[in-house]
Image 1 (tube, rainbow, N blue to C red):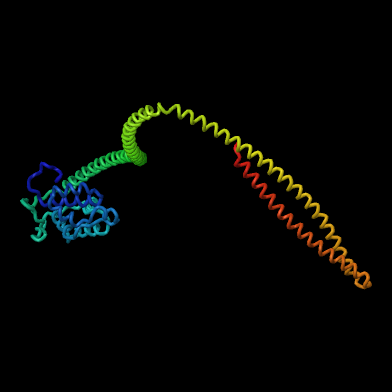
Image 2: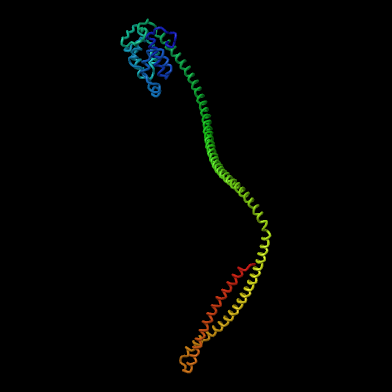
Amino acid sequence: MTLDKLNTGPKSAKQYVYDLLIAEYLWNHNYSYTVSVFASEAPLLVNFQKHIPEAGSALASRDKVKLQTDYVHHTLETLGIGPEGTDGLAIIEDYAKHDVPLLLAILKYFSQFRKKPKNNVEIVRDDLKVPTKNCRVQTDFPDRDFSVENARLISARKKLVEQKESFDNELREKEEALKQRASHIERQMKLLDEKLSQIHKLEEVVVSKEKKLEEDRKEEERKLYRKELELSVRENSLIREAERLERERDSYRQFEANLKKLQEELLKVKQELSTKDNIRVNTTSVSVQTEKCNNQMMELSNDQEKRELQNLVHEQKLRIEELTLRAVRLSRQLEEVQLFKYTTTNDSGKSLKNSQPSKTILSESSSTDDVIQDAKQRLKRLEEETLKADQFYFNSIIKSPL
């Protein structure tokens, strides 16, 4: 068998045919891994692997991949079965119709008929030989019982079944391990998602805090800027105040110097005025007495003027009262005259004797009008004089000393 790593010698043509049958059987049962192992140990199976499609397409299609016709003929010839004979044609027909590997078709045929293989085996043509490197192809083999080969195939099949079961168990274990690993990875992913969400939340918190810190920093910078402006303004005001105080100090020094000069001059003046104090006292007493006399005279004159004005006002009031009484009398006379005129106009059909007194009344009424006009003028003059007297009295009160 090709799976035996100690078999390093040259392989026979039958050995390559066995490898081909086993590989085709494994491939039809979807044992891709085992086929790859056979292909790695049997270089002549590389061409077989090239003619078989990929595993995905083989699994997707229901029809199994068949070997080429020349491969089938060469296999049967190598096994001692004539492809043109009844056995070979039956095997080829069964292999073509049914979805079974060539190995199972051969075993099925011989298990049914139990026919012996022919003694004489035809020589394989040179163009059907499989080219190999550093290996010997043997077409001549001694005549031996086919049951031995059949037993070898059965043992190989058992080994393949055992290997398949071991592979299945291994695959199940790996599948369970992969499922556990997938569940573990899923849990890890959930944990990572939770941590990622926490990280996002922390990032948002950090960003918000950074924004707040940035705003606080800007606010502090604005406050510092305002403080600096205030300090600069205060500094300028203090500088101006210091300059003003310096100027005041200079002016104060100058004032002290001038004051000293004035004190010296004052001493001189006091010395000069010491001799004139008596004269000044006398003059001041005389001036005070004269001022008192003048004040008394002014008070007397003011009192006299007040009395005169009061008398004048009283007289004017009396005259106004008399004039008002006279005006009232004249107004009554005027009403009587007007009433009389109205009555005379209504009695126009009287005699000439009655007309002569009416003329006298009209003349009297005309003289009454003159009197009324004169009285009005006098009243107007009296009002003007009264206003003047009141204004004079008011001015005298304001100007008079208390």
